[in-house]
Image (cartoon, rainbow, N blue to C red):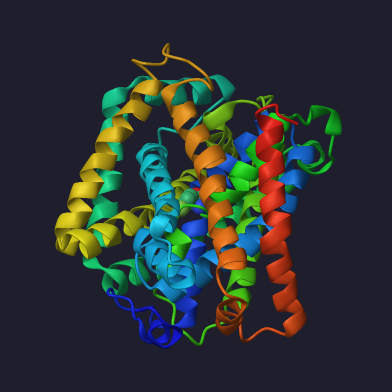
Amino acid sequence: MNNHQDNQERSSLHGQWSSRLTFILAVTGSAIGLGNIWKFPYIAGENGGGAFVLIYLVCIFIIGFPIMVSEIMLGRRGRRNPITSMKILGQEEQGNEAWKYVGLIGLMAGFIILSYYSVIAGWTLHYFKLSIFGELSNLDNETAQSIFGQLTASASTQLIYHTGFMIITIAIIAKGIKNGLERAVKLMMPGLLLILIILLLYSIFQGDFMAGVNFLLVPDFSKVTSQSILAAMGQAFFTLSLGMGCIVMYGAYLPKNESIVGTTSAIIFCDTMIALLAGMVIFPIVFQFGLEPTDGPGLIFLTLPLAFNEITGGYLFSGLFFILLGFAAITSALSLLEPSVAWMIENKNYSRNKSAFIIGILIWLLGFLSIFSFNALSELTFWKGTLFDNFDYIASNIMLPLSGLLFTIFASWVMKRKHSMDELSDIPANVYRLWRFSARYIAPIGVILVFFNAIGII
Ligand code: PFF
């Protein structure tokens, strides 16, 4: 498999997406998840609002865009799991297999992220249950806090939902690309969007909309620290599912004739709109009910029940919202699990079922530590906070940017120009040059500056 000719004939071992639309849906399904609706508002809240949002948007466009194009391209040329793809491509372009370690960092990040992602997804399932049993009615600020407090204090409740969520994720991955993944991603996004729009109307008419929008959109640069810039960049990687190998993995299932730049644009547009929409829903409610924007990981679980409570038939909307958020989380979780499972199938020759089961169990076990971070081990704090805080910091702010950086360096510096041109042959020459320039200089310099700044070197 050493020359270009062979490379074009390489095909994925797990099948391909049946259409361009399913690829877009799958990547959008991966991108849109708890990161947009749960994480973005609370990280923005903790980092002062508007200025953070602005830096986040800059990161999405000048760093996220070229890196996503690079990752899809690498996947489609490698046609294997991220580790093996990087090994093959490194060998092909440079005679050097060491590039496989970039894929490895990504896979490890996915492992860590899924372990706590599943715990938070479990919270949404619990809130679904509370909604439909009417346990979220007649809420005030204090009851909302105490309901959330009870959940985080109970390791056993969280464990049940974490287990349920992991079982669903493992079962879908075990079914493979066409039957599992595609069906799941086609169903869910439109419903979620609809409910967010209903909630937006609520926020506009009933919430303190101006205060919320001011907080979210008017930048106050005095609140910006090097740590908040790192957080904005980490969030850009997290929300676009970059640096983890999952975009590389999904790219491996993309037919040769599809436009990489076109699909990337659509995906980034949808992801960014949903995050901003979520922010515009949450903050007006925060200010209306006198909550704090800095309330942390509990933010949506404190605010949204209060809003639903005031809408006629709110418990129905609330139930629907939390279950759809759970679905959005599943489509992201699938993309977090698939690369490691594909790696195991391709390298250990295990069946898909067995691989999904083994990796799933390991991630499930690691998730216990995040659960205990909210109760038994909540006093165990070091460096960035609890174990949960540290997992998230290391994976999102360090591992994702690091491997994303190396993916893009490979695609733009190491890969021969004629190879990348071949992958991006549908776009005009000047757009190609723009991608290459951003991928070679702007994105890497951006990531490196933010890193050095955050660890205090510059
Ligand atoms: N992008 C997902 C979200 O915003 O919820 C989370 C995620 C999925 C992160 C896949 C990383 C990843 F590879």
